[in-house]
Image (cartoon, rainbow, N blue to C red; front, side, top):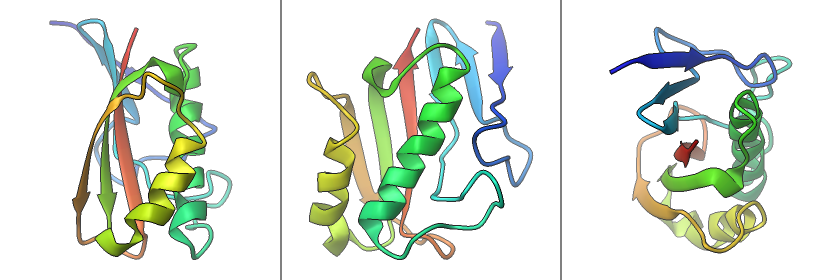
Length: 124
């Protein structure tokens, strides 16, 4: 199996030894992205809705490196710091995706200073 790393300067840079995205076997896999502003690396906004929007803008920037959009996503995994924020998160998430929606797993997670983290799998 071959795999190719994808790097986008318009998305937050990795904070450790991982790629922003990997292409392998006909799919594009992203790392988990938080709501960091790519310009300064700081988290944006206090609401889960605005953090969700920033996360999806960050993911969109990485997908764009392979001429993909969120419409190419087949799977998302969402980590919420508080599952009680699900309705607010879900409303913001829905702004970015069209039917047929990707399959999704949403879990409660301990997140370091952010409210939401998302990774996606897109078909090439």
